Structure formats: C-alpha cells, structure tokens
Image 1 (cartoon, rainbow, N blue to C red):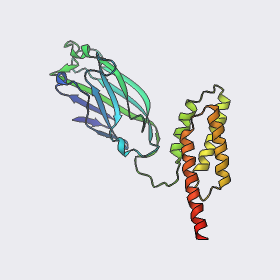
Image 2 (cartoon, rainbow, N blue to C red):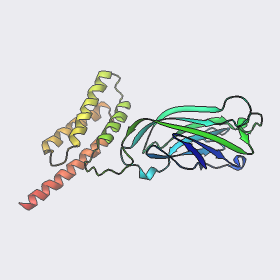
Image 3 (cartoon, one colour):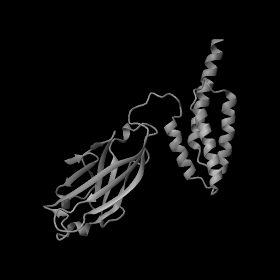
Length: 241
C-alpha cells in the first residue's frame, strides 16, 4: 500500500530482489487526478540502474486539451545508516501524449543491493513521491462544449507549433503566434456565426502559415471540420426552401 499525506506519498516495495518486470504502485489521488509510480527493477535504457517514473493512472478518462505542468520529486529512501537518500526532481508537462515522466537512471542497482548503504532492509525498498501543480489547463470533468475547437486545445497546440517553428526571428514568431490566436478565435465560433468568406480567408492564412514552417495540421483539421458542418447546415437550409 501507499501511505499518502497531502501531495506526498510513500510506497514500500516488498521482495524487491525477486522482481524483474515493470510494475506499478497503488494509485493515489492528488488534486483532480489519479497518479501512480512505475518501476523497472532491472532498469530501462540503463540496465544497471533502477528506473522510476511518475505517470497519470487513468489515461482513457482524459478529455481533449487536458494538460498539467507538474513539479515532482522522487526519492529512494535510506532506511538505516547515515547519509542522504537519493532524490531527483524535475518539472514536466503531462498531457494525452505524455502521461509519464521520470528517471531511467534513478539509482544504481549495486547501490541498492549494498547492505552498507541502508536502502534495502528485509528486501524492502521505500520510495517517496511528491507532486505539485505549477499550471493547470483543462479539467478531468467531461465537457459539454460543442465547439469544434476549445480554447484550452488551441492554446496548448499553439505553444507546440511555435516551439517547433524553424524561424529564429522572435518578432516573426510573435506575429505568427498572434495570427494563429486570431484564427483559433475565429474557429471557436459556431458554424452559424461564420460565413463562407470567413472560412476561405482562414484557409488562405493557414496555407501561408504552413509555408513558413509552422506545424498547423491540427488547425487545418479543425478548419475542415468546421467547413463540413457549415456545408451540412447550408444543405439543410436549401432543403427547407
């Protein structure tokens, strides 16, 4: 079992020396999310180290646009003897594509097995995790929003697009970001509020943005969805006449 106090929880792994495959800690609730630790007792990528990761426990429940900037600390605790425990910390964005972050080289296996180090007692290893949220985008609650493009999705996707942008001129990056924001605000409107001319102009601007090197396929896809809905509504209106 995992013992939890606030945003911090401790997990004691029993019979550690007999473990060879990846396994998980019990799930804990921190904030509005369920988290767990995943452990590779024989390492991953680094075969002579314990590999340790923090991950979101219920990936299928994530709504589109969910993101969390998380600061976390993972510790392999010394249970006896003097000297510090092994602690590693970082901060990372968790989202639908990145549900796990951590450390392939958390601690050398030889150090764990060394009786003088005091990490492994009665073949039990203690791990402590501390999780704090630095920024929250989206909710784990299912949204009833019907717009094809949400504000959360647009902001996070624009961030990703600009990060990958090959232009080095910061002023050009800023200008392109502003254009993308205007486009997403346009596409957040309902099909009834948009004219065909609006969609044609949006298509032209996106073509130009794509030529500059921005990754805008996500926005092209949303534009096509809006166009389809607009065409369906136009057909329904004509059918009633």
